[in-house]
Length: 315
Image (cartoon, rainbow, N blue to C red; front, side, top):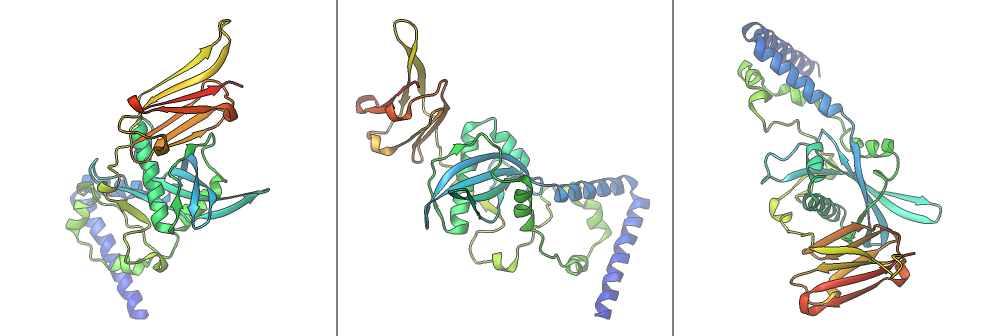
């Protein structure tokens, strides 16, 4: 132990000596190196922040309501390019009971740039949501319903609980001695992360999370797994009035080319929104202009032109 401590002290001393040499020989490079370390340190210490919450269902092994909190976290690296995998991290499932309602909450984090870009593109946003669901299914051996709706609240549960869940994954002890045993040279410090854009501090897994499977704490889903083009179908939404211009009902016509049966369509209607999904083909989520009567809502599918017509009387 004493020999090991002396070796560690020698490594640390050499490291500081190299930094002193760099400060004298290349002040600008030294400044860039220090600023980069401070920036990375700030990112590593930053808390995850809630972005949106979606509600779906666990079908197997036991049916249950599931809330997925999508969070942005600077500790998660952004993909290197549009063709590279998208990193994400998944927290532990937490069962919760409120009065008579039982549900589960799972937190999922992406890099902030990834989520912010997806806010401007509904297709990309849906792909990130589907990718999070796929990761949850693989990690916990769940079967999920891929029908979902985005809730009006940004997070289910407290922010403190979400932070503890996600950050707790990575609070396992890091062997600093092993990190300091890595040889550092003046050339390596000079090149540092400023000349290596792919560099990102590694996040360590607990031993019980390491397996032969390709599922890990920050999971990179291969691009072939997220290239399913789920389109927003063409649609027409209108309010039908009577002869006195009193609004009677909301009518929605949706064009679904390639679909020849209503059985392929998954329709969910609430008082103020509507969701239509056709597996791996189409997805349409609309906020309705006026509250509707869900019990009196009807749907009709016209095979000749692959059009779904939904009639929703107003309340």
